[in-house]
Length: 298
Image (cartoon, rainbow, N blue to C red; front, side, top):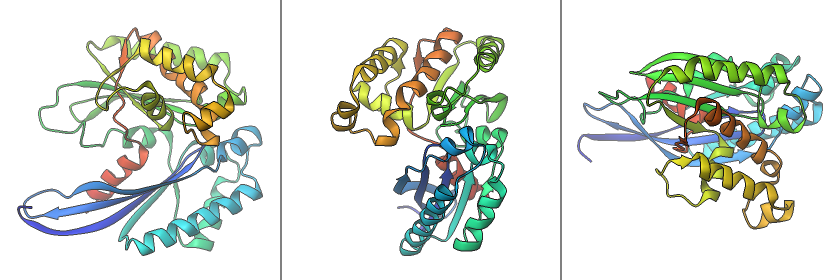
């Protein structure tokens, strides 16, 4: 590799409402080039913090203990991988918890890993940082939709700048607990119609574990847009399957089985309201945006 200097390892930890992810990246340094990151390993732990946060208003002692154990395991993994820098962000579940600040203090005290609870604006901004959308002379207008367990972030992005963004308390875990009001759905619809429909030829980018799984189930090749028709038929297919079939035939994790269809319907809602007939699924997420943030700090 021309001008190659060294490879270091960085890690990002995304503490979401449905699961916690550790992404370890190889960071390649070359002379006269900006550092570039490639994926080395990804570990996902299904601790549904949102179930506590959205129904009880706080994180339970049991899940605090599981979170601490998870952070210990991530710390060991980072050690054996010889990770030099890391970043840990928490989103909707800990944002919504009355004891969120106490939880991250307990984690840092017991594991040494510092966690920052980020607001929805920051969360939305991170997903735009991937190199897929930040190359020179990119004149495309994008609408990113990132559906999590507790919230959905919408971000309109062009020429390296965020033009519009908003966050709505609509997510897979909230939906299965009947915690999304009609007023919230109406606000979501109104924002879509007042903003997204103002842009011509806007490209919708779907982010999040559920849309990635739906795309995989659809059988399309990576890089092929997922049409609304194909999205509808895939969600309908999954919805009709039994719990066992979803687990065995589709190889869904147990914590994914109950949220994949409700989450999928949020993507359907966006496409229907905006009258856009396809969504692109590049298989990136918050943790990838966090890697870009680490690189920008070098």
